[in-house]
Length: 87
Image 1 (tube, one colour):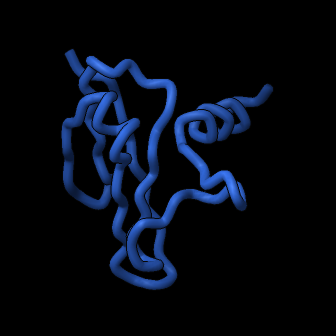
Image 2 (cartoon, rainbow, N blue to C red):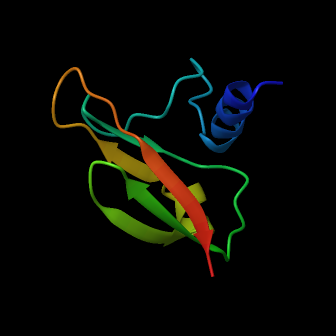
Image 3 (cartoon, helix red, strand yellow):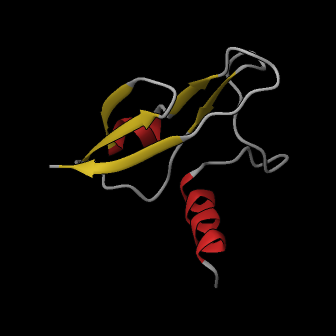
């Protein structure tokens, strides 16, 4: 499997989808999406960095139960978010 397919597969396994249509759960407007993550360690802490600016640290439990909210200010737009487990 290529690196890009592996990355997409990993991201797909982390993002919780709406069972009705297989799309991300949208709890807000069209410009704000909340993604419930899966497969994280509940007690671990994770740092998320939006490459356009901004960082936050949350627990695996928070991310799996409440999700990660991403807001896009313009249409069309995209967000690149990097994450890592922190000690």
